[in-house]
Length: 428
Image (cartoon, rainbow, N blue to C red; front, side, top):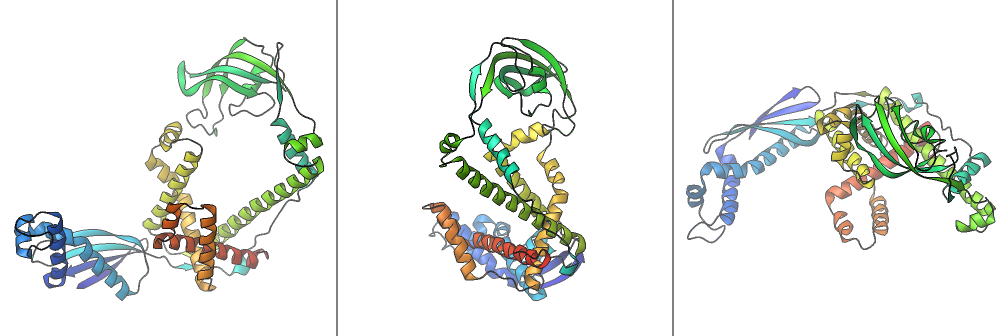
């Protein structure tokens, strides 16, 4: 085997290989055996036909095609090892010459792990700004719990700001019905913000069986992109008006929620709200640390394969989130009037930041000898098994090397973040 290398932009390296017939002969013969196992060669048991017979039956060029992947992989990885270079992902392959009995010529364009220079951690300043949780926060949470348990009584008079109405609703833009803009017995709590800004205000004062037509402007930043910035016409009919009575905030209320007393419920809420606030602040601090490191680090140009990988992960995360909410990716794309390609373009900036954050984490781990040992991995695997007891799919998956690599990478990232928090914020 002989090869040449050429440096390309965006942290890429191009290998051009020339493989002589005697160097790929064994791979071609092995390919012929595989093909003879799949194709019936008259007079021979599967895999036992001589090479010349297989060549005559299936064609030598087809045997070369069968052998090609193995030949390319063997010579590519051997060259990477010789060059002592760190590559990411699989290379782009272009076959320049493929003919039986002749030199095989192909190019492999590999993405290289970009070099990165970290700043002195002493130059990074991030402070924890945890807000103290007190009685006001607990009372607010109690109010939310109280509003979740209203007693409803039908009302014959006009709807007031503290009431609830059920309506039949139809939405139009320029006399054309809005897709998904029709609803029967749609519930609207008039004291709460509605996903349609201004709708609740239009319903105050209406009685059972009243009808009304009106127009509402949707904000330009509204999450329903096909309605954002548009004027939407409404036709509604009021089916029912209800007054809402809420339970007293006393020990009986607390007992209905599984607590012995109102004081016990307040203590529990204080603990939960505090823990949630700490978690949110941890996330903010970690994001701020990575943002500061990204800004002050210097990077070689990132290869497209690295950014594309992050875009793909972001797409899968979006799809998983939509699945949890019972929304298909097709409906989501239709609602926001975008194609999958456009979504991937939108991910570009975020994907680059994520790729840089991953590179920083790796570099910090190397520079500070942060490693994942067998005990770390065993503890995480035990937690996974406890979370999915008796799940055979999980049991099989965590035996796979690529899954174990992912688990190890996650643990290492957590260790890196802990190290950075201690060095920069002064708190593990």
